Length: 241
Image (cartoon, rainbow, N blue to C red; front, side, top):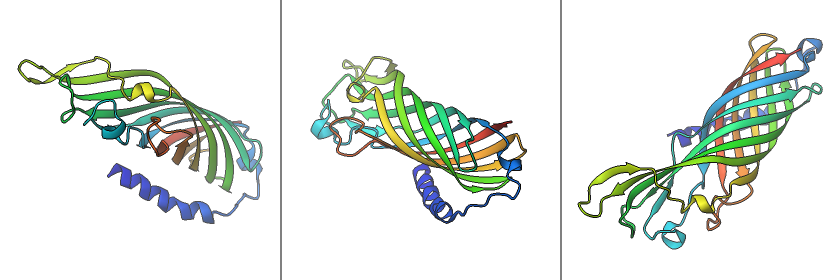
């Protein structure tokens, strides 16, 4: 359901971005007499091809089933400088949590029943915002970005099988690293987002930002599809005069 919602939202926003016309207010000083912005945002992510696609052929364990995890989210802080009525470069820092799971129930292994791997990532993004629509209260910006994602820490939670009595459900934190070891700890990618901003006051604005990211490699080398991400963020932005 969440994945369908994100896809439908992106489709619905395409006409709004395509048909947006430039609308600068007559008194530009009311809109552009600030020089800097500080933004705080958070939202949900939907990773695409972010796990091993062909486990029975190329997987570390025959019969293991890999799936993308749920409950993915991000928290970000960005600093921007309004150059003129069209351009705003920004530097963005994000914490991104992602997860994938491995089910060993039908695999040729007796130790684990399943495994969940939580990855805690740090993103450093360079953005160049372009004002498509600009009025005193409401603004629409398109924001291409170059993205650099680093994996800072990880956790592996394994559900084990006791080989003596086959008791299920014992949990430990041993390391299962079959996929993690093949995933680059430093990823480059490109993204594009649309920012819908409503200025509540001249100092404070609220933002809604759908985004699509394409990383420049596969999640693991044996995949034949590129690692991608769709995101939806809500935030608050402070205009500094």
